[in-house]
Length: 260
Image (cartoon, rainbow, N blue to C red; front, top):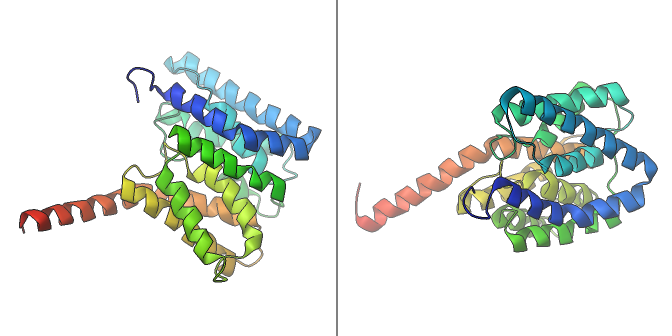
């Protein structure tokens, strides 16, 4: 998106508008400690953006605002400042900045940060997502879908699948708040999710399937922990999902034209 009004920063601004309800509810119910953690995460991300700006003439992006929100909301508790800064630095550099900044990255930097800290410090507790905060993910998703900033297939595939899985008892309702928040913050990333129409639906369904798998088979895992792990694996599988979608399209095209 680099013509006319549709630049990368245009999409960033639309995403910032979408994440506003979720951010406000989280800060309202969280308190001053969450504000301090968010400020620290945003400061570290801004410093690393400045470093790459000076080293590679790379433009600063406001994407750090919602990346910081995802990290601050979902990061394991009791990390301390040093370990938190270490994880943010790894995620920002290896997950985004080495690829040329937001819009060119392969994996969401918040997903990289959270996975790095979760695997590195497995004994630390993960946060609980309050139900009122989880409800705020709904207007966030709606704004993202209406503006086109979030891929509709990813969001709707996971949401509709959950609507079937919960009544059947496949997905524990206790995991829904964390799974919903992780869906809008990490999985429905327009950069790192699948790009084809069918691939996006597969993207959302794969995320849901992994959440169900982990919720039923990962003993002792916190809801946020298993949702973040599902988000990481889904992001890594996004290119494969696009390849599957293209293979199906080519096969259907050959069938219609009578070619071998």
